[in-house]
Structures are given as structure tokens and as C-alpha cells.
Length: 222
Image (cartoon, rainbow, N blue to C red; front, side, top):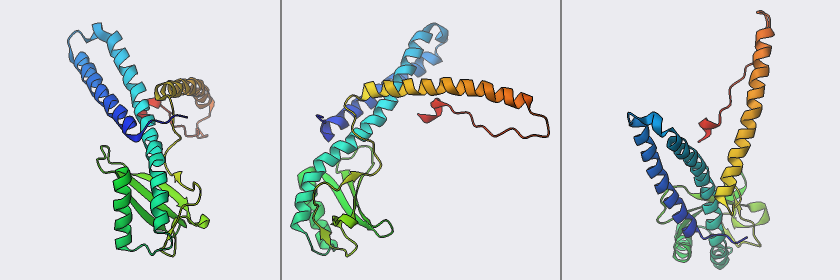
């Protein structure tokens, strides 16, 4: 799979966000007009595009994380190899951060998680525009990253894993449309369940409690 660079994906996300703000402003302007009923087709088109774009933006955020990880992996492997076996004191930590920043433009921190028994690697672009840190984790049992002995352990193979993000998606717009279609399929089933639930509720005698049911709605997810 040909993956775009972190910079390319970030630029795409910023351009999409700008277009979304413009579309949202237009939608609000149409709704505020006295003849708003005459522009319903345009309102619907804008609302649908905004929903699709919001999903695309979430996908792009995952793509950014994947691209950042790909760009960080070789540099991280090289730098940690240079410090293999050395104590991870303040001076070593600063040298590692500066070396990685020079090669990747990322600020990187290594943290030993005692209770999880793994090394957490957090990374954030120096010029980060959305403020989120990418988190990679590597299991210490394999002897990688920062160990419980507070020493650096060179990476062997590819132990790094994205912690919170989904895999890279080559076509975010197509995936967003798939997600919307899946939402619609679920809502169709929910509508059938609603009807069956109402039938049950109407049939139950007063001395029987109706099982609790919270209505699911996709509009609350964006």
C-alpha cells in the first residue's frame, strides 16, 4: 500500500476542515434567510456533505497517526541502537529527543509503564496543529524501548504498535461512504426493533416492568 506522508495527510485534513467551515457558514446563512424553505435542496446537500466530511476527518486523523509511525520507526530504531544498554537519565532522554526531532520533526518521549509492563512512546509534531499526541507502545517482555531497569533497549524487528488508532485507509472518502451505508443499515434494524419494542410495551400488564431501552441515533456520534 502506498501511504501518503504525514505532511501530506495533515495538509489534506486542514484543507478539508477549511472547506467544512465554509460549508457550515453557508448552511447557517441559508437557514437564517426568510426564504429558507426555498433552499431546502441546497441545505440537504450541504448537511449530507458535512456529515460525510466529518467522518473523513476522523479517518484522516487515523491516517496521520499511521504515517507518523511509519516515518518515526526507522529513526527511532537507529537512535535507540546508539544508546542500547545505557541508563535513561535526564541527559540521555534529552539527547534522544533532540536526535529524533532533528530527523523527524517530532517531539518524542519514552515512558515506562510499570503496571502495564511496557514502554509507552508518545510523539507529537513540533508544529502540531491539532494538539493530539501519537502513542505507540512496545512490550518490554520482548526487550524493546525503555525497560523496567530504566535502560534503553534497541528495537528488534518491528515491535511498535499504534495504541489508539485504526489502520491506514487508502481512500477516506470511499470508507466514509461505507460507514454511512452501515449506519443506515443499522438504523433500519433499529426502526424494526422500535416497532417490536412498542408492541411488547403495549402488551405488558401494569405489574410487569418493561425492559429499559435507550434509543440509538447516529446523529449523536458526530
